[in-house]
Amino acid sequence: MSQPERSIMSSFDLKKGSVRIGYSIMLLALLVLAVTMLYPFATTIFSSFKTNQEIFMFPPSLFPQQFQWSNYAEGFKYVELFRPFMNTLILFGGNAVISLMIVSLAAFSLSQMKLPFRKGITLFFMSTLMIPSATYMIPSFLNLQSLGLIDSYWAFWLPAGASAFNIMLLRSFFDGINKELFEAGRMDGASELRCFYRLAIPMSIPVFSTLLIFAFTSTWNDWYWPSLVLTSPEKYPLASVVYRNIIQSFNLTWNVKFSVLTVIMLPPLLFFLFFQKNIMHGLNLSGVKG
Amino acid sequence: MSTQTARVKGRQPVHPLIKKSKDYLWGVLFILPAIIVFCLFLWTPIAKGVVYSFMHVDFINGSNYVGLKNYREVIANSDMGMTIWNTIYYMFLCVLLGFWVPSIVAIAISELRRFQGVMRLIVYLPHIVPAVVLYGMWQWLYDPLGPVNQIASWFGDHQLMWLTDKSIAMISIVIAETWQAFGGATLIYLAGIVGIPKDLYEAAEIDGAGVLQRIRHITIPGIRHLYVLMFILQLISTSQGFMTHMALTGGGPNNATLTYMYQIINEAFTNLNYGRASAMGVLMFLVLTSLSTVLYYFQGRSKKV
Image (cartoon, rainbow over all chains, first blue to last red; front, top):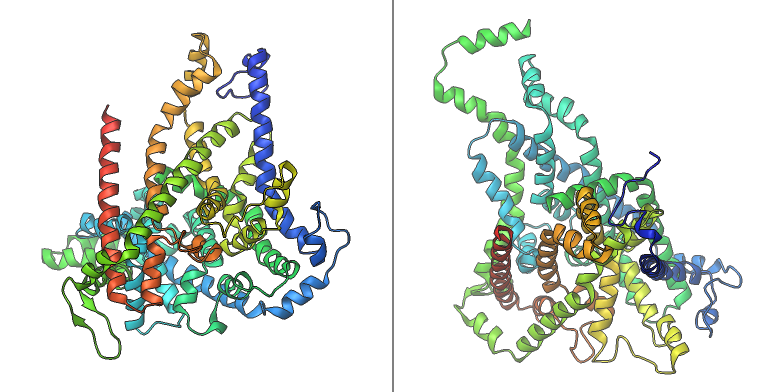
């Protein structure tokens, strides 16, 4: 491993003056890019400790002169975050259990079991991917209304199972498992259900964790649809609450605003840093699928 | 022992139809929940959208069939042209400002000898943070007294009203969205670039091709299929954009950032005219589907050539 794998340039290229100049310009550009990517985060976090006068100070400074923790106390007083946080967790938990169950059963059936009209069913699922979701957003809302699911968390848990993308992702993973394994299980008298939860599920933990991460980020991020479907604000998840009370508020001072934004920004950041490997792996999976 | 009993059972003569349905029983049972959910929450709304577009939807007095009235109203509406124009302008800006960025950044990152992982992470960071936080950030960055104007004032005392000036409000939105979204596309391009065989570069270098020539003749053709794919995906997703507009400008100033999708939302939840909103959705569906069909067709052809 003394020689690193080459990319577009070889180490020989770097000895040339013109290439060197170009390469350093590129490095500089990437550095600028990194700064512009990180600056908004930094200014949000540091501004949450400033006084409101300091935020508008000229010339602008990044670091606060002294840490004013009272912004956070004020932020928590202004908007209650604990209950929305629990609501978000309930939403995520239901999504994870119910929708993943529906999706994985279907994927297993499509991939490893005897099934009539397999092609037709696949088409039935896949063709929904071709229809842009925004075009049926309004009828979808009316549909939930006529099903009596408005203001209920079931309106999120059940439709989350109708995800052709997740079915296909899991299916392609199950396809990769050797069929003989399940044949052997069946020969030994294991029922299909047992084959599924004793063999298929444990083997696909990595894919499941990817799907869980996707589910987490989408529940944590989605603010518009919950604020439409849930009519009572005390059922709102975090993102909707913050949109309604923080983003749309005009009388809240910026430093307090930033303190709340920092609080709801940190969990997904930590989550990401913690599960970074799985997430990148999942992105590659979905990227290959296109 | 259980193996033996299974074999014995297999030999017993069973009616073929019963045997077949028994074979299928579990497979069907497993897939049934998904089929029900797809029917209830995807296909029903899709079908209902078409039905509603021909109806006057009224929850109190009952809905009634009105024929093409909704469509006629939508087309005759004076705002229609404006929202379509805004949407096209928005899509155009997204391509102009955003489409080429990820591939170039991906090529640059793939050339990094060190810190490649860190750079990937940094670029992807805005994806992880909830959209509402980003709205808050950009409200502040674009504030007339905010950092962007402060930094701009070092170069001249010209202040820009990023979100309230009619001519640049849409550009501000596109910049914010590009900043947020290009990381995901970058990672996809990176995966493509990593997949290009390294001996191609080796051979080109021996033949005397410079670095830029190698990028032009090996790297870019190597990820051409991704360019087409990402272009289609971007067109489809940007044509539906409305959330950032809603959060940052509320469709203003003077309707300069009112997109077609935003207008559908307004039609449904402000004017409570669900029939007309459904008709607009159906029209959008027709345009988008034909657009993606045409683009996929071209993609198929370019692959053959």
